[in-house]
Image 1 (cartoon, rainbow, N blue to C red):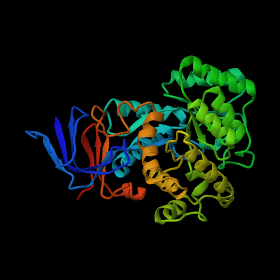
Image 2: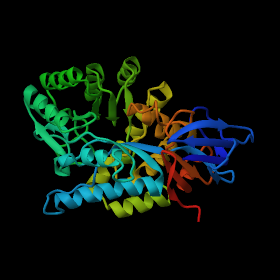
Image 3: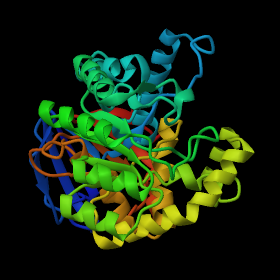
Image 4: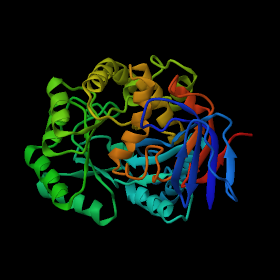
Length: 402
């Protein structure tokens, strides 16, 4: 099947411009030709879609997600939770144009199950990169989520990591420190792992060639993770100049998850943020913790951005169809340019997932996972909300033009 997209204003996420009068040819799921300056390809018996000057760009990503949290299986049986997660993932693709997700913790390997279902074509959904459980210590971070496995001692972590690998994960999620959302003893300025636990966990991941997604929320945890070889630092609520220097030196990715500290009733600044906080109805004590952490988090986000640290967009909130879009708005609010936000949500996110050879930009040879939006997101990132079309491998999976 050959599809020709004509009269597109192209944002390829290679260069920071919107190019009008473009045509993109898709054959056998991949982009085979890009014509600019009004030039038209031969159409023959192709399916031709006239985009009427609207904005064609790579699909969006969210590289820090979890399924919904339920404290016990009595609250919702596991089969229902798995089904709900799949529904949320598919809705994010069709309703928001999010074509890729990296999971940061899910119980019962439900992320692995949905990854396999999507990859096999059994269901039409986004590309999913699975972590299985997130691993922490006894008395570690966010135990009430249901997604944590408590480990103690070097071999406790080694065994748990081997279990994740055996069950088909793509990467290992280690929670090295506390968080903003949790009980009184779960604080983001506290680190949880001992030196021998850290070294053993990172060593087995190196030996088995699995990337570490490191929940690190204070300078000590960030530095340990970077020096030991973490692929990405998640959150980085509190950092220092040495953290920035080490991330640059070791070429480490940073996923700041601004939503965790920024989305409270006191901070909500637009209709989407206000709708989210009203629906979330977060406990007052947790709102206070988030508000207290927000300015420091924003400061280190901006310092990392200005220093040139490699950064990608991940939200850490739900529902998945809204989460990435909210996070994009928060990046802009904290000083990122629209171009920096788009890169973080497309090209850089694909790079974090080691999928950049096939995804993340609109280039010849890449898979045609694309979206069309009604206004220029280089003027305002919230314009990605004006979704018109979603393509997966060149097939239209969502059409909102009518």
